[in-house]
Length: 379
Image (cartoon, rainbow, N blue to C red):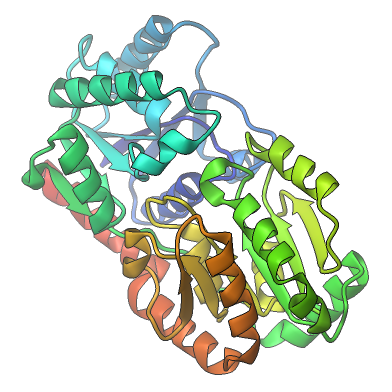
């Protein structure tokens, strides 16, 4: 089997990380893999994938049509059994390339792209997003042979917004590697306490996500301010991991204008997320919309109790027994849960997190499901 992957970048996102794990698995199974990428990223998995000797082609800079022609040439030369496209820019170019050459294109659906709350994002042009939705719905009819949604909620979202037929979508959850640091909590705690200047006895809350409207960093900060006295008295500290993005300026402005006693540290992009998660006590994830929330899976793999928003898709990812759930985009509701978690049984909740991860999101089973789907689509 020969598979050509086409995606926006080899950056820090969940789609990129999940694909990388799939590539290692498929290569072990004898699948021939070639990867086409639209743009370089300094942060993320790019160097790892190159060092692992995967064949990667970076498209030349140029127009949309120029990329279509490049893809046509690559597909003609490589003759893949399947083309698998991921993320919007890559997907649109791959669909359009089908106007120039025939191939079997499958496409991942990884987010609730047209969720109503996206229209509240100050960086989003509402008219442009509606145009994208129309273009998306039109081009999928000739450009995509099959979709793979990462949750039932994402499948439902695209059936509703793009009128995609149910039989054209398969659902395969994303998986994550096991966390190998579960027995190193005390050691890692001491290491990060020294490195980051933390309070060794206070609870560590952690959030992982790029600084974008979707991830609701401001909701966490506003909630901390609301509950500042109680959190400070408990010695609580908050670690934010993730690269800068469109919400960074608003985050920096809020921190400048609002003084809080609770310790808050923004760590930027980190390559030791699994270690940081293993050292932490509580994972906070108040996303406004998600396709799945890969960081939420990583947190459960680290045995952490969770505080998360009540968006529908999270019902597929967590259980009521390992998470405290707050109203989406409501800092007051989130603040109550930040305080409530201080009196919960973290050990019991963490054990349930681990069981939920092992039952639903272990990488080997997820990758096997994807490989089986590939084979079925080629029959």
